[in-house]
Amino acid sequence: MKYAPVQNYVNGQFVAATSSRQLPVISPLDGTHLSVVPLSAQSDLDHAVAAAKKAFPGWSKTPIKERVQVFFKYKSLLEKHLDELAKLCSEENGKTYGESVAEIEKCIELTEFATSLPQLVTGEVLEVSRGVECRTEYVAVGVVASIVPFNFPAMVPNWTIPNAIALGNCMILKPSEKVPLTCGRIAQLLKEAGLPDGVLNIVHGDDTMVNAICDHAGIEAVSFVGSTKVAKLVYQRATGNLKRCLALGGAKNHLLVLPDAVAGMTAQNVVASMSGCAGQRCMAAGAMIGVGNVDHIIDKICDEARKIIPGENLGAVINRASQERIERLITEAEAQGAKVLVDGRNAKVAGKENGSYVGPTVIDFVTPSMGVATEEVFGPVISIMRTNTVDEALAIENANPYGNAASVFTQNGGMARYIVDRASAGMTGVNVGVPVPREPFSFGGWNESKFGVGDITGKSSIQFWTRLKKSTAKWNAEAGVNWMS
Ligand code: NAD
Image (cartoon, rainbow, N blue to C red):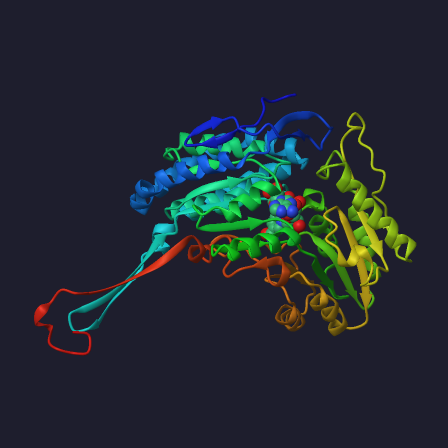
């Protein structure tokens, strides 16, 4: 085992979980046994919530301009430790080192946004009647929880930690049991940056711990990022317990490609979108719809895909079970009449035989009912469907239950606007394969890709992490008599 057993992080200290249940942590890159992660008990969560509750009065009453000083320092520490964090992130998740560097850089951008929060939460004041003023203030919610998935061990925790904590909340973070290591380093860096003990706590576990978080009377709000199946369960359970909840789910993102699109750029974007992070991004292109004759672009997509080499510029998928599931979906589509133009099944990486790799895969003549078209494949696979008209393509996009992203590739501005207006997705793109909004714009999908109001990052997250206090005051007794007196 390469690293010491993973521990929970409570009140500024790493502590062993009281439960003896645990799971191995295996690197998808080569099957190395990295560590073991505890599946913590209810008492471990109680301990963490108690620490967060104790820290809350002091932290929430610290002026926000002081609170964000921690994040200015944290940003410098992320920069200083970028290489080390990127290596750890890559090791436990399987993405390439370059993708992990980009992930830590995104953490830095998210932290920069948090340092700007004092400018965005100034509240309002107005004399609403003679001598009577109303004012609004953004007040922290209390102890909040953040439950995160495996695919971004650093970035998704940093979607919630900087904003929620800068806004005065104390947090319980539940990392994915598949990638529990990077979060521990994040906690250490935040402590080094001056975060008081108890403001951030980490409790490891699986679905049992997620349910315990949703049920815990001491937790006021739950944010969740993961699959749609679990997002629904978490949203129902947390709101059933009268907590506020924002639950982001899975996706099936459609790229509509028109014949007039710039072929080379479109091919690069389509392939980068479907294969980046081995296709394990909720913003990955899962399906492409070619409108009319786009054979010349599909040829270039195949050329680009063949440049993607597992173990070199393509990382591993999270585990063997995921690899087998992806390969099965490709095989089923083929059996149902789709044509596999570039085949990533049975990928092997010399010296990494115990890794879990799927090569880039391009499947043409997919129909909307095939599994590769309906399911979130979460692998480096693009399923190409063909239509004669833009409206037929939009009908396919609109019919999918998810709604994270949709993009159009064309040089016709009017047509791009027509498609963006009609796509049923929260994040749309024109000639962009991964239309992630950058700070200060917020991240969040529609339909079954998100349950709850608001988005998880950017300005839109302020509402989720705060409560609005409205105060009405009269200080001038001579103000005269009116309806407010
Ligand atoms: P997952 O839903 O399996 O797990 C997410 C979290 O939920 C983990 O912490 C896990 O321990 C917990 N969990 C798993 N099963 C549970 C259950 N039955 N009950 C309660 N909790 C449970 O997701 P994953 O496989 O870790 O991540 C991949 C998924 O996350 C993909 O669907 C991807 O699209 C999605 N995702 C979405 C976004 C977004 O912004 N919409 C971002 C990143 C990832």
